[in-house]
Image (tube, rainbow, N blue to C red; front, side, top):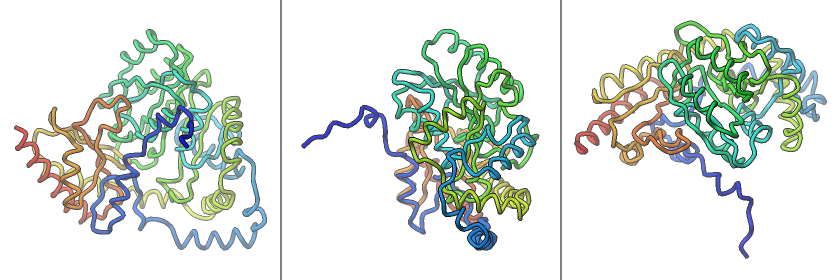
Amino acid sequence: MELNFAKRMSYIKASEIREILKVTEQEDVISFAGGLPAPELFPIEEINEINQIVLKEAGTKALQYTTTEGYAPLREWISKRMNERLGTSFDKDNILITHGSQQGLDLSGKVFLDEGDIVLCESPTYLAAISAFKAYGCSFIEIPTDKYGMNMDILEDVLRKTKNIKLIYVIPTFQNPTGKTWNLERRKRLAELSAQYGVAVVEDNPYGELRFEGEALPSIKSFDMVGNILCTGSFSKIFCPGFRIGWIAGDKDIIRKYVLVKQGTDLQCNTIAQITIAEYLKRYDIDKHIQKIVEVYRRRRDIAVRCIECYFPNNIKFTHPEGGLFTWIELPEGISAREILEKCLEKKIAFVPGGSFFPNKNKENTFRINYSNMPEDRIEKGLQILGEVVKGYISQSE
């Protein structure tokens, strides 16, 4: 018997990253594919100690249901951290704990999007955000970007001429997939346009604490005068992704709507994970831990950049990120990164082709490189092989 599925099932496709990661589970594969933190940096001993303390001192609370909003001490810490680092003015009631920042994106779709609505995004943008929003039947308009971020003139023109725009999605700091960071002027201008045209903004910020160089910038939310802008954050990149604890923050009236839709999704996030993280933050220096991560990733970024300069052909372009997990490579027009991936997988090298990061599938000569997960020697070996494959493929195409 053939079943009648919801229309949204026709919009949902398997994540290209997740499919590639199945291949990278083989130990001999050098993977530049997923945005995976370095596992050797997880504070395993400290977490083991905290787990025992939590179960001994607060076991009944840790193993019980909690509120949908999340564990209050953790929300208080997040609000203070955002106020100090991003220029916001939150308290705990501006914060909803989510299953990673990814759930914040899915809930944003539930709160804002009806079938036929339009989402504006950077071109390219985070592919899992595309999947999350597309499930609600929206379409996308891609706004071009340069090294300073989204083009505000084009954005304003689209806002002025287009109906049914419900959401603007951006990653202004160490963007996924390009690694680019918006300048201050464009952050301010987006907040102004959001207010002028009455369109919500989701400012995704999972990488912002991983800065290697340059000056930290305030969030777009810090320039929000009307309450239209929401921010996501996560412990996945600065602590441990396996806990799946993130948050979405914004105007309290909007967060209450997020709470309502989360109650229909999963009731709440893992109680013991929230309490464990809160206790870690109370007993250990998270800034010291983040600095350790930054030092390792800076070194790996430097090796990746050097290898691209050394081993790749001169007619490619790539970004030089000031932080985060990724660099972005653009090949000459007409060169297919997917075909290069097929040849690389034969040599046990993996990356993510760039086409999946464009919701309207218009740029196949690009790909993303992650440098956070592999040790330095494997980064060098893998990028040397990858560079040779790219050189060979381009020369054959000329």
